[in-house]
Length: 395
Ligand code: SF4
Ligand code: SF4
Image (cartoon, rainbow, N blue to C red):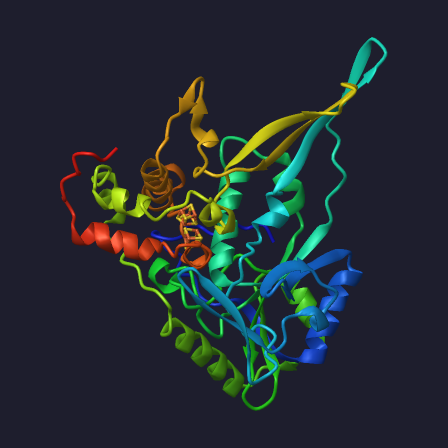
């Protein structure tokens, strides 16, 4: 399953629902399906509860999923909360994006070892595990497609990303509830998964805990063929449609995308950048939780003897001063200029660069900003005072 989404964010996919016949799976049958995926050599990664949050990590089956948990999210706040049922996917999104599994947070690029008067250099990488993503949401499929475009379909192919991405199985889940900071409907990236998956599940809770399962690839169809479920009843299909429709009507945020690119291009001196700079801590949380941000830096380390050196790539952020450091100083020295750079890239120049918005409406940057800066609110403020004169002291 490697087919990229044709467009994301402002330019929108409108493809129909998945192909093939839908079946209904019990929780036990879903676990059997996951075990079959493991037996086929895939490592399962999916949502699980850790450190008071729902995060993505290695799982061994249904038993590791966050049964009966949901979360309450708003700008700068996230709290786990018990549900009244045992829903396995009864939450929206946690702080983790799937990008950690394809675009590694830290990656050793090469190492050099001294041997007498010479040294050897090795850039060999251990083969990455073949992954099966369990529980990817619609907005996240769009985010993966954006990173595919950056790392696989641009001028250069990132070999490590390609190796990790190759052969990955994607089991998506249609969202049964929106988070308090979600706005995928505004970005037309959800809440229904339309492409970019092998299987998609809709969790049904009324009338018995079960899953409507549909395939999105030949690989997914083959898995469903072995899964042992029942052909989906018309009532289950209707119930799944209602769940997604209800989720779409309960978005935590809304965002007006019309004209946002030109709005930002003509607002580089807007006084709102000064106002947001009084709150922004330049902590970089927003970029680290964002499923589409892809910036990195490299650093060299040596041991104390000088006999061994390594070069590492690690995630970086446009919110650090070092990120734009060029012989003597950073190009973006102020928080004002760094926030403006981030938002303008996400919502404007990304479109010129990659043909889509850089935002999929997941809301993570809003939830995980420690001071609750909300990009939907910032754009609303800039739009509401379009053409406002810059303040004298601003820069
Ligand atoms: S900019 Fe914020 S809302 Fe948009 S994709 Fe990134 S983290 Fe999600
Ligand atoms: S906008 Fe919020 S999360 Fe992003 S750097 Fe500023 S304070 Fe940190």
